[in-house]
Image 1 (cartoon, rainbow over the protein chains, first blue to last red):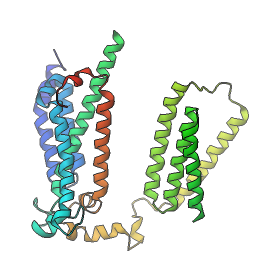
Image 2: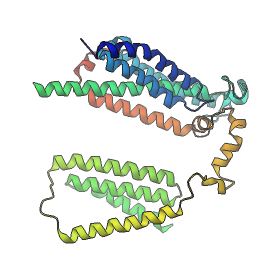
Image 3: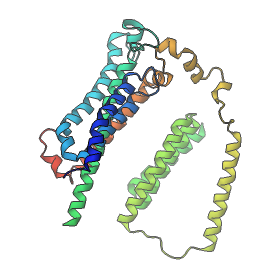
Image 4: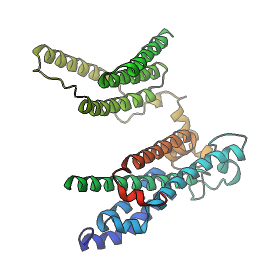
Length: 153
Length: 183
């Protein structure tokens, strides 16, 4: 049997959606409550690490292939850069200015739609941090197993 | 002004020695001297936060590089510890301890903001005008994604580069990853 015992598997399959929800909440409300893209991304990555520990690597590979993961990583970095560069296009040539708050979408203070580009930057950072952290953990664990298999031979 | 030129000459000499020397360990030590010169330069240019980062990265990098070169270059230090060397190192540790005590005396009391004494400090401006000028209720978020968004872009770049490095370095051993068609 791959992975851990059935108790760990059942509990982690219940808990995983709660962890993902908590991560998404931390990312989306990063401009209102403590947290943000970095913290939420780490929480998202930890949910997949929990799945990887409980069910084994093959299960996670089926759920989130490495190619898709690296694409999500690149997408997050690209989104953040696009948000920054749009400031050059939409306003009078200021990199990383908060153009949405100043001109297009002021929103209301202390509400979800506020603060202009900050929530979008949080989403991009969260995507990037989550994908890349999970990628690093997955690569390191694969590397360790391969080297231990080599030394056994 | 002369201190900058002195540091610059020192750093250039260290860089030339690091390139030209045949011994790996002395090259690593010259790289360390170069990095500490750079951190001193930042300190004299009144950028203490960058100087602290530079020193921390330099110490870590130096330890890792020395560890990796010592096992490769086989320059072991043999022989018993001399009495004089022990005395000197104990005295140096004591002097550093005294300097640390002096530094801790200059720190402000626990719980008081350092920059509250300086009304024109940047942090005071963020606290006062953060909500009006960015609209974000979380002031940390408004600092890292609006006022200091360049920093965050740099951090994202560091993360991206480290992912690329990990993927490339670990690919040799992990053969399964090589078989994946589009990674």
